[in-house]
Image (cartoon, rainbow, N blue to C red):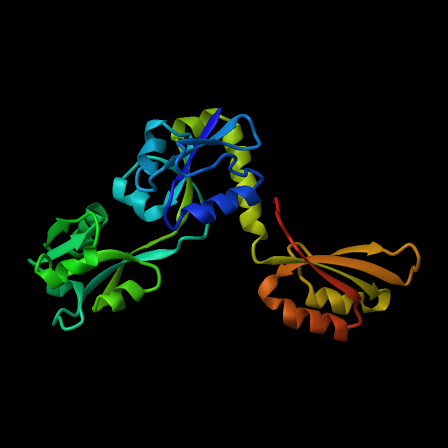
Length: 284
């Protein structure tokens, strides 16, 4: 039995559930008020937990795997195997001060107070810079602390910077960059084969994102020109068309963001009947 801890709410919950569904592991009976949920594989269950608690759940063996932010993994210092970068939930821990503050750099904070929900990450950051500060640990509303005299600066999570602007704060340094990661208990990873299957399933979805599958018919005398346009992952796949030996079927995987220009180049080079197909999963 494999237990996977996933965020029970917040900004990481919905994209996590969506990714698992794409990987063939939909959350069944998944009301967020429940502690556990099943999936289509009888040997896999989900444990709903606070994102901040997931690293320690996985470290201690309460869950075999988990999905949570790298910032939370680093903050707890949990000894886990970081398996995959899931490439969503990107955010930065920003060092920020009030708009009217004379502070311009981290060095200006020597001897001052910094409020944060991430005291360990913040401590490591300033220690590396050789700057002595007083850390004020808060559990919420961090952005308010400079305005009420609790702190001179904050280190807080920021996805777009909107919260900082709204609260009349300016960012002066990026302390830590984070995204959501798939993690595993070290013992479970070495003993349970299905953990590798889960990694492969989720990884195949990530590999497919931003890719498209192209299929087209190409006159045999135009093949070299088409190959120059379509490098693909390992070169395009070329097959004979049974109904017409002078025509070849060419298939290739290309980046989605170059589809517009690529299709036009292919058409100009002699390709016809061009199909562009989304890829759900791609296993290396």
